[in-house]
Structure formats: C-alpha cells, structure tokens
Length: 410
Ligand code: EZ4
Ligand code: CO
Image (spheres, rainbow, N blue to C red):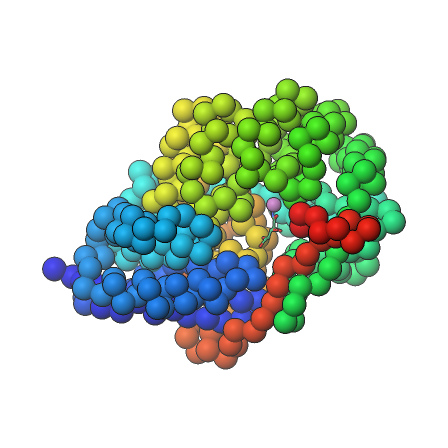
C-alpha cells in the first residue's frame, strides 16, 4: 500500500503571502493544497508543520474522508479558521494525488462536469462614476459576463473594495486589501454616508450598461439587519445578482430580519469555516449563495457537503475567489464548481505574473467562463525555485474605524 511519506509546508511571497502544503507518497505521487489565511499565515503554517505533518506520515493517501475525520475529530478542538484551513490544505492535496493516480481531473472524481464552464465575476471599482464605468468596461473587454461594483464614499478616504490604481484612474489593478508591513493600515467608515451614496452609483451603472449585466456588491459585514434591509430595498430597482455580507453573520438569526425587509438575493460565508456556520442560514433559506472558499472551509470534502445540504434549499455556490486564495485553492473551487448541480457563480481575479511563476496553472478563462482543465488532479504545479526566491513577509488586512475612532467591522 502507498503511504504518506512527507508533508511539506511551503511559504512564499511573490507579491503576497501564500501557504501551500505538498504531500508526497511512498509511490512518488505529489499533491498540493492551499492553506493561505490572509494576515494569519504563520499560525496555519505552524499548525500544519508542528501538529499535522508528524501525525500523517504513514497514513493511506487514498483515504480522504477518513483522514478528514481523523484531523477534525482527532484535534478535539473543532472548527476555527486555522484548523479548517489546515484540514482544507491536506484534503486538497489528497484529492490532487487521487486524481493524478487515477489519471483524471478532480472534477471527474466528483461526478463529472455538469456544465461547459463556470460563470465568473470580476472586481470593478472606482472613486467616481467615470472611473467605475471605465473599470466595468475593462472587465467586459476581458470577457467577464458579471461584475462586482465597489465605490469610494464621499467624505471618506480609502474604503473597502476600491483599488488604489482604479481610484486614481491609472488603469487596471485587481483589488488586493492586504498591505505589506508589520501592522494593519487603518480605514475610515460611516455607514449612513455609504447607504446614501451606493444607490446613486448603481442607478448610474444600470443607466450606462443596461438591464442585462449581472451586478454584484459586497457590504463587507458593516450593516445592522435593519440597515441591510433598507439598503437592499433601495437597491432593488437595479436588480443586483447579489448583496454580499450585508451584516456580520455570526448571528445567523439576524438574517431573518433582512429577509423580512428585502427580496434582494444575499450571499454570505467567506469568513465561515464549517457547515455549522450555515445551519440556520440554509435550513431557513436566509441566503441565496454560499460564499465559502475551499481553502477556508475544510477542503473539497467539506464544502461539497455544505453544497449538497444547500441544494435541498435551492441555495447555490458563489465561492470566494480573491487573490489571497492561491491558484491551488482556486483550482479546487473550479473542479468542485464544475461538478455540483447547484453552482451559481465563481469569483475570479487573475493572480499576478510573479504568483503565476510560482504556481503553474492549467485552468482557463474564456468568454467569461472559467474551466479547471483536464490535467489529472487539480492541475497546478509548484515551482520550488520561483517559490523559494520570495520568503514570507508580514502583511495585514486593514482595520476599520468609525469617524469617531470606534473600531468597526472591516
Ligand atoms: O475581504 O479576500 O469578497 N471578497 C472579499 C475579499 C476579502 C479578502 C480577505 O482576505 O470580501 O476582499
Ligand atoms: Co466579500
């Protein structure tokens, strides 16, 4: 029987930090998993290196579900982003190995393709309406068929979702919130100013681009349920594809209030890490889209279970796909998305060229659709030489304060 011979933790920073697991079997097969937890990378690296790698040596690499349960139940301390990102990375690597051994892309092991490709959305943003229009046009020119729209708010400085280059109008730049340095930068927030301004932007965008283009928006956990309901109502004339993270959803029941107030489709879950975080949201149909990343939700094995549960309630996927999900995590999302019936949409920002020199990908983006490709396994290779050229370097997500200095949700 083939056994797990090594579990390596690879840290690299080709412009941003990534944590990658590489599992090698006694037969010489290798698999990759993404364990990147933005701004808390070293905690996951230690969890894997110090507590997971030593106990996996000698295990059967083919036993994916059994290994998942071994790491989840065996830890005793269940769930949490560090644990679940670590389990996710091992899970992805084992799926990668299983695919390579079988000579099949992972989506075939998950049941095969349900569709030709995955509808994808990109990130448009800008300080003023003309820049937002330009940013949307750039995405449409690249083939995107759906666009997320984020805007600056008059009177506030840098806010979530508006890229620095986009704000100055100096060309395409995918929004990347993590900033290099040894402590977080600070942003400023005023929810009422945001709520007054946002509908004016969507009115302008709909007027310019017409009724068909799917438009998305991320509220980034900043509103109360009443505020979210009010904003949802104000945006209803502009027919959003979804309003994301309208409230801090740790309190799942609070979404009942939002649902009472607005029929706006809702997407939640990028900071969740297990099926339990969704229990009320799914069984009461309080959301429309599951925002989890494979990387932060226990891997392909666990996110597939969440999606199967969600399918009973007509809830679809909208997997998280920012650039802090490595190409390995992104590939895992594409294989899963291609194989599940209740796929909704996939977020996609192209990784930087230096990142793609470390991670050689085989997924494709054409005519607005992503496809994971047909290379056996996940279809991503890690270039050690390119990876080793950039070591870990501290970087943090910003923090957010109200104008009087009170800490708010970022
Ligand atoms: O804040 O990826 O929908 N996308 C997002 C992202 C997240 C970052 C966190 O690491 O909300 O911008
Ligand atoms: Co988000």
